[in-house]
Length: 373
Image (tube, rainbow, N blue to C red; front, side):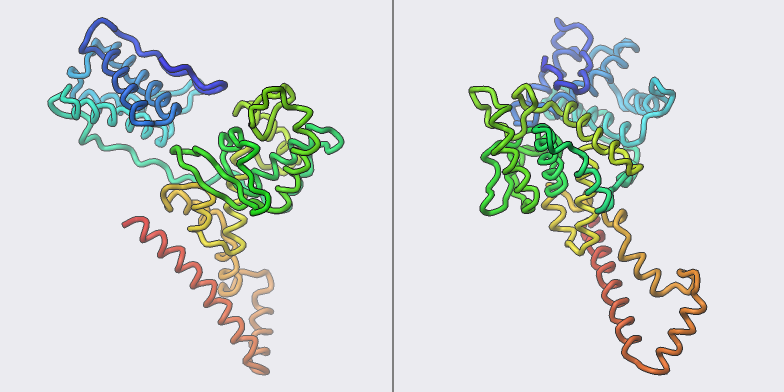
């Protein structure tokens, strides 16, 4: 049985009779092995082990010990169980969490049917709940991001390391695990490129990285990393004071500490910089498809949440066109009439600005329609 990630969620144990060749234990282990053979990531295998473990425990409590005993009404009953389930804090599972658990169950039974272990898939026609379309809870402004970046103590070598890590997060928007696994040779300083190897979905991608982030990384590599590394050199770029690679939990605690110290009234850690990078680039005119490449999203729809966070264009159009957008709207309207009477140029410039903004908004709408087809 696979071990849990360090600092991660502990997988649910698969209970039942391991000696029964048709029992849940045997068939879940076969399914997990099939995922490994097909080169699914350890985290995907672990998630399946955890969620299927919950389902199997629920079935065992109802004297259902074999996959062939599961029918469509039983799967629907499990779905209702998830809907009414309450966590330790008394709150219900989010629909996104329910969706994830049911998707793993459906995938498991789909595989069983393909293996001819079942005559039919009892979860094939299951109506899944609609997951919420959530936006990032917090996004830093450019000035707030600079305030967070200024928190590390640069008189301390570890402060220089932390500044280099924060700059890397801010410049590239990479995921926490992607930064943890960065190697010294994953940076091409001359070409200003960072290579993410085996990111989410086991995909490699090349990203641009800013000059400022590279300058801090060079300072860290030249002055700090030689004092941290323990032979043999593992090649990992960012090291702890023990000369080891960061654990995800350790990195989260460190970044969250700096965010809290900046007193921005924003909460978050590593992913906060990912949201911030995407939103600020979009506000400054970057095409959403380039942001999709930066974030490593397989689907454009995943990236499009940032079009709803970045509202500068919408605010500009609102301010230009809504008569009550400003406190002194009447005075502004009167002044506009005077300008129109004296010259046509300001009005033409205003119309051009509005048309450009509306065109950009239409382009975003077009992208959403294409992705929905």
